View 1: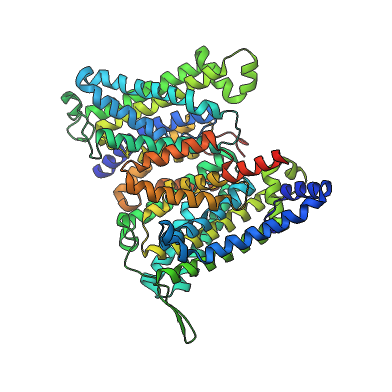
View 2: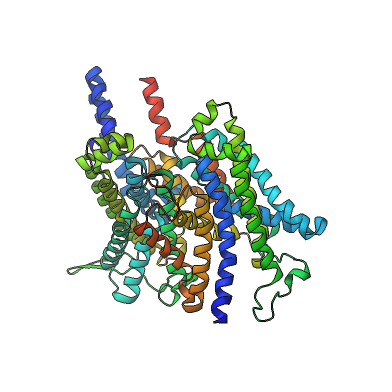
Length: 289
Length: 342
């Protein structure tokens, strides 16, 4: 029983990372119409920047600076590489562009920081266990879940009540109308892209504290995030979050009973969802059909 | 060569021949001459490739990847379905062939058959999950489906060899009656692959010249109009998906036997992305575009990985440059220039 709880909780933590990644991907997917294959790359950038800056800024400073760095690089990438492609309606080109970026980022990370895994130091106080029975619930894991909850809540409030958030939501529905109402949609899309990269960077820093840093960490987290979006429903941010948590926990539980299938199970869940409910759990009918 | 014409091309060509009929005949002769030169170059390739700095296995690899890229292009360039998971069918073919040789029987034709059928069945069964989707959604589902097989290959390691890949098999000599064709010889294997390549090309050309092929192009050009005309476009996309997947699996079987080895990398989404960029690089609106893309990409990869450790960055840059500067591909650019000149 405790093993099951242990694995389910581990799965939940993994699911939190998937959810953060999927949320950023879904934002970029719906407003920028870009399948960001480089999203894992932005995760890696966030993590390694935090690792590099931690000796100067401390853990908490790095926790903020890493994601911000990823967002700034995202802004540059959007401005100079993605923006020229908006006028081509075929999603093929941005997909290939970000695919190339993913290769470049992973390879450059390996060149700069080395192929060896690096440990990310977290404050000792966070390393101790919260409960003596449920030893696996460390302070850091609570922090990861807490920060993610805050971020998701903050994002929801922003999208719901701020002018920027309302414009982003309007833009996902009808970009042309938003543009003709006098909104600078280039700026809007740039900010949205950076926001997505910020979330990826945050996932990277948080994941680094548990999994450590390796150059391929991004490409191993991005595929489950795609699955999270498909399971949750393309076009739904709520779906992205729940999709991530569901597949994370499902993979964790599977580890208890049939460890070899823990990777494959999330793809099986996706197939089942696609057969029974093709638009995903929270997806709107008719979208992308 | 007329068989390669797509619906819209044929219409354009028809108008052009009516407007300027004297130029039509030389154009046809030119095309026929080009085809003769092309196939002669392939048949004699083992004789001259070593003299220009290549090696026979490189030529074989180009043909193998060529089958896969041309097959992907049936879906990508002609039907307009953005498949980003074709490594799944390639890898299934490879593992199907490898396991047949290792566990079942040392027979090359049987390995090709089993691998192709396994990949083909998988593509046919999973096709309905994507056939009603389009654009971004189509791409995402195909990416994710591809990864399912990747993880099965990695984790089921007592059968598939896991992360280290499947080894311990080799292509077997082919016995036809009393006659033995020893494909363990590299040059002889090249000719076996060339025959498969020719068969695949003939199949694809016939399909594209048929009403089925014309419907594919029509779906790409104006999906909604076809829907209003009562065409069951999902079934046509399913057909494209299944046929494309089957031929890609054929390429996979040949690839496994080329190296007598296959690994989960043959199922990975990076390979899927490479197939797509090969099609785009050569020009995905032309039948032969993908083959040109394959030749350039495979040679570039071979060369770059021998001169720099950062070849992944170089390949990534290649992706970025192609997308920003040559979105129509090499053949697409040549074709456009030709039209402007005319």
